Image (cartoon, rainbow, N blue to C red; front, top):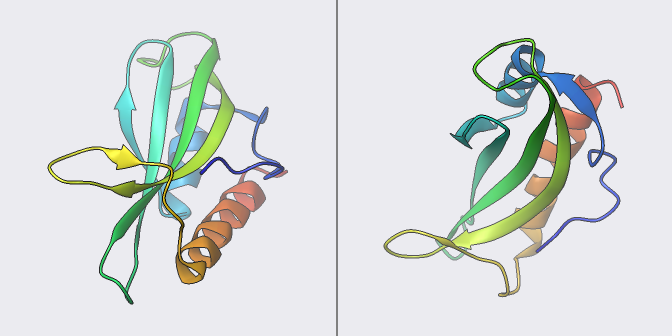
Length: 115
């Protein structure tokens, strides 16, 4: 599920500040390479026992990710259900409590980034 109109897409931040802000909002920088990084926030479905990951894709627009002053732009915000043994599935319906929790994390990160 891709989230539209979050206010996050297109925002830029230096790597150090984005890492700190994302951590405060419940995200961790999970995958990264020289020019892009993915931030994930795990959300548990307490009613059905599933796990979902709210994911934010970023790309370096200045510098490389090995330097804390690299500037990243947020490209996409989406949510997937964890599947065994590993991976995310994006097509199944998402329970309302999970969507509400995802919205809370999105708003928190947006506020921390000053949007």
